[in-house]
Structures are given as structure tokens and as C-alpha cells.
Amino acid sequence: MFFTDVAKSDPVLATLLAFVTFAVSFLARPFGSLLLGGQNAAMVVNFGIPSAPNLSPRARASFKQACPAFAILRASPP
Image (cartoon, rainbow, N blue to C red; front, side):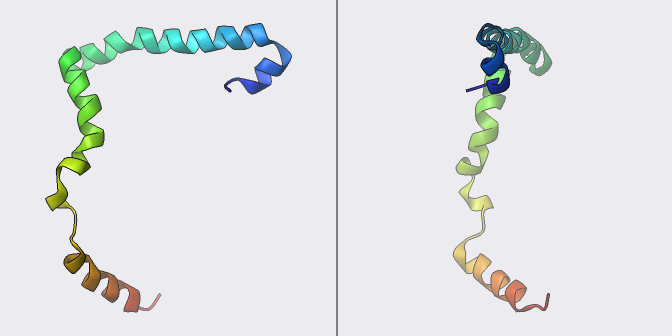
């Protein structure tokens, strides 16, 4: 799936590149932990950023708020 051009010419090199990609991500994990102040903080950030919009439904506009704004924007000339 990855390194398709390399895999066509040399499958062993493609396998090695896949393992190198895994190794780089494995070795980069402690640096992210140091940057964010620990494994727990890194986990909270990694799970918190994608889930923040789902946890704050009041921050999104309701249909009653969005419908008049859409009508005004649609009626304005281009």
C-alpha cells in the first residue's frame, strides 16, 4: 500500500522503509511526551482535540440561528 514505486522495483527496500517509518514514530513518542509534560497530558491532548466539538453542542448554531443568516447571505449579490 505504501511505497508503491519502491515496492515494484525492490520489495525488500519497501519493507525496510515501512519498518523505518514505524521506528521513527515509535522513537518520536517520548519527545511528544516531554513537550507536553508527561504521558497523561499527551493523551488528554490527543483525545481532547478531536472530541472538543462533540462535547460543546451549545457552541454550534441552532437551526433558528443559522437559517436567517443563511437567507441574508444567499440574498446578497455576488
